Length: 303
Image 1 (cartoon, one colour):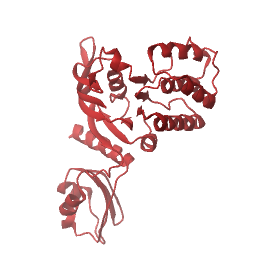
Image 2: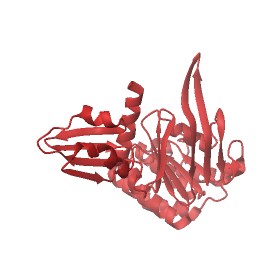
Image 3: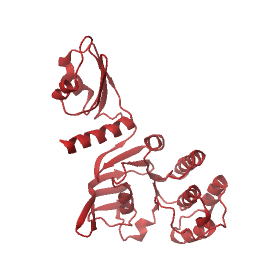
Image 4: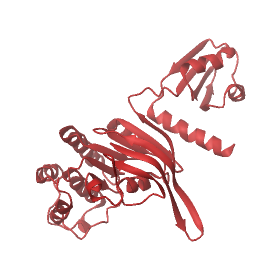
C-alpha cells in the first residue's frame, strides 16, 4: 500500500511562493489501478514526483509498504515513474535503455521487455531522439512495465499517442496488471480513460484533495435530480434558496435538472415543498462528479 500523509509543498521563485499541494492525504491500495484527476497545475505531477521520491515535501510523508520513500533506495526500487516528458535519455537506443534500467531494477524482466516490443515493434538499435513523440512514449511504457515493479506511475500515459497506439498501451497495462498484480497509477485529462482503466480515483484542485474514492461506489454523497413541475417554472433562485449544495442547474420547459451534493434522502426532504409532479434521482457518473466538484469550487472562490 502507498500511504500519502498530510503532504504539502510550496514552490519558491524569488519572493513569490506557490502552494502546489495543501495537506493531501489518501491511500492507494495494492493490486488496483488508481487515477489521478485534475486540471493543469492542480498538482498531479508534483504529487507523483513526491510519491516516487524525486521531490521532498515541505511537510508530510509518503510511505510505500510502511517505509518512508524519500532518500530510501529500497522503497524507491518498488516504484517506477513514467513522467510526462519524453526527453530523458534520448541519446540512448532502446536496447541501451533496457541495459541501463536493468542495473537499477533487479526485478527487470527481459521476457516482459521482448513481449511488449513484439507488440509495439520499435527499433531496438535506433536512438530515441530519432523517434516520434508517440514512439518515445511507447518506449518508456515498455521500459516501465519491464522493470516489473510493484507500483508503476504513468503521468499522462497516453499523451502523444495515436488512437491505435492508445489501445495497445491500455491493453498492455491491463494485461500487465492481470499477470503480475502490479498497482498502476495513471494521471490523465481524459475522464473516459480513467473511468475505463481505473478501480479508484482522486481529484486535485488547486493543490487540494477534493475526493478519493472507489469508482465502483455509487457516489453516495452526490445525486442528480430530474424533476417536473407542470404549469410553473421553477427558478434557479428558488432552488438555491433551499440549498447552496447545488450545481449544473438547468430548466427546459417544465423539466428541471440539477446536481445535489448530498444523499437522495436529504434531497427528497429539502425539495419536497416544491410539490413536484415527478421527482427522479439519478446516480451521477464520473464526468458529472468531476464537473460538479469543479463548479462548486469555483462558486466557493467567487462567493
